[in-house]
Image (cartoon, rainbow, N blue to C red):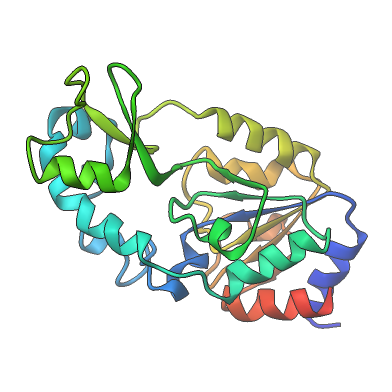
Amino acid sequence: MDSIEKAVSLIKKSNYTIAFTGAGISTESGIPDFRSSGGLWEEVDPQLFTAQNFIENPIEFYELALPLFKEIKEAEPNPAHFALAELEAAGDIEAVITQNIDNLHQQAGSESVLEIHGHLRTGSCQGCAKEYSFAEIEELMQKDGPYCLDCQGLIKLDIVFFGDSLTTEFMEARKLASQAELLIVIGSSLEVSPANLLPQLADKSLIINLSTTPFDSQAEVVINDSASRVLAEIAELA
């Protein structure tokens, strides 16, 4: 039995399976990951995405980050995203927990998605909590900056910065992972804490990632290959 057949067997035997996705699932959609060669951290200082830097330098943050975020928003789902949506529709997985902010799971048809690092659809005023669309924030940046039209408070995109508090969606993700008989890790290096602790909460784990992870020895099956190719085969066989 090869590794994909073993993966399908694990999924079929599990009564409650959760998918957990990282940046690697979206690289085939043209969105760079973070740590690999050619990744985002080779072009952008990670300090840009700290909560402290955002508060101290909001205009600089938006000037540097908005072009990157605009590219992410223009990306399209790839076969891996569609395969996960297919597996959910067939009842083989219950939900997707994602570290990604790109909205590609929803675009592909996944219905139960927990975005533990937030999303780019909206931003919120830190003063009065008024919501702004991404397009509205872009428009404000062309005028007076990312400040609320009602109270002049700073508008923060609804994403999680380094140093931010854990979100309610992360707490829900912990609950789902702890209930899972199987957690499928897809495209995550499992190096970012506390998200990398989620696989340890499930009874069993399956890891699909191009490179090795610190948790490979704990997984039932590890497949170091393209998420699109592997998930498409799993969806076809499941």
